[in-house]
Length: 211
Image 1 (cartoon, helix red, strand yellow):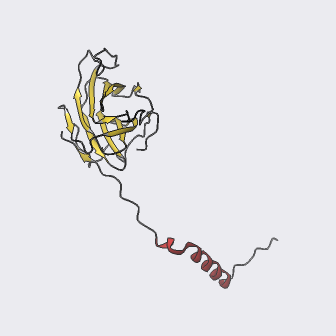
Image 2: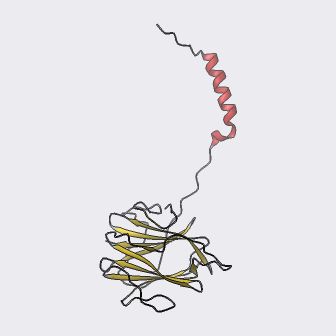
Image 3: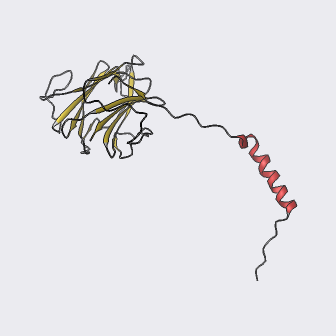
């Protein structure tokens, strides 16, 4: 028969004292920082390069009642919180009832417009034609939202042209980035109602396309 060491009360008390001494003030703990809450417009973790992440959600669910409603009347506009917002990441995500586009910014949120677009679609500022897959189209314009750094180079080096072929979002294309104004085309499977809101910490512009 194998014998086992016996933990006596005095030994247990000694060990407990050592553990408490090592932990120190950590036993009191500290409360976690509050999660960012969305701010509605006028109607998640990101990766680089731009990802097609089915879980790309900034802490929201399909039935989150704290979010603004979907708007079927466009355009949707929002005011800037900073003169220049450097784009640092782009994320696309598929959810049960909507598809999502997330722009991440280094500082603040740029002035934005989400509007319908009608072919022929063109690049800005050249006016040259561009091909975007889909049968319905939206154009996102970010005034002060750019990947171009003032001293040269880019704040985001990931993909700016993606064809995720989600239920609603078929194609995502950069339409140009000039003088700190960037524009983007969303190619969809028909028209869609949109939900647009912003988040902080980090600064994000979120666009949901309803299925």
